[in-house]
Length: 305
Picture 1 (spheres, rainbow, N blue to C red):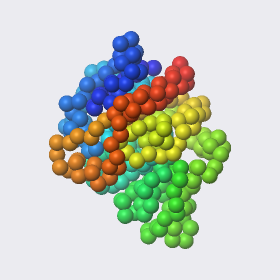
Picture 2: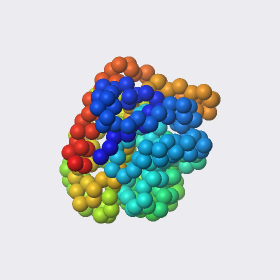
Picture 3: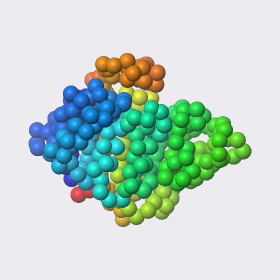
């Protein structure tokens, strides 16, 4: 197992756990800060190609753990999944479903749709949203067809029923009742029972874990986005149990904090209209996220040893 830090914003490399790993030779840093202005929020195609070249240079492959930095770069998970050469089920922990159809670029709100087009991605399971994204999803251009087709499952941690105007959407994570979508609420269920049920239904293919720490309560992570209410222990338990009999093909982690800075008005507009206005204390964010990343890495090492 190798640790890679994809350094777009300095949010991970500033944390003590990363400094220690790099000093001991246990982590490789891929410098991508020069690409960050054209990767943050929305990825430029040329910058994505350049990034793949840098990942090729270090031979990044299966079994690696990659830290991506801010959730503004979560769509780089798609770049990592492009490198996979065998069938995989993606387990996606996030406070946001990342499933919008506009803009059609590879961006932090739409990367799930691009990943679903990869032949080797058999299914994506999203766990943890509890924000506004699941309310009136059709008006937010959500990819409900992927749920209808069984390619995507979205398990809300907490979400109210919401109006549905199109065709019914039914699956293990949501049901249509009359003219409303009723999301399954994991906060109302025993967590252990849900994980057991999910493990029984998943195919025996290896899994890829993508963790955006904004799925966590704010006492466990401080991120660039509105946050969920899951505990890290719940996430780590699920990773361990779902990996049994399947194995983990790769892991990526984002949801660290860095001040959002933009050089172009389009990215600045997307950020300003969708991001909480609160600005966290950078020092507090680094301390909190360092503790979370240490726990994630410790459990993953135990699972992947």
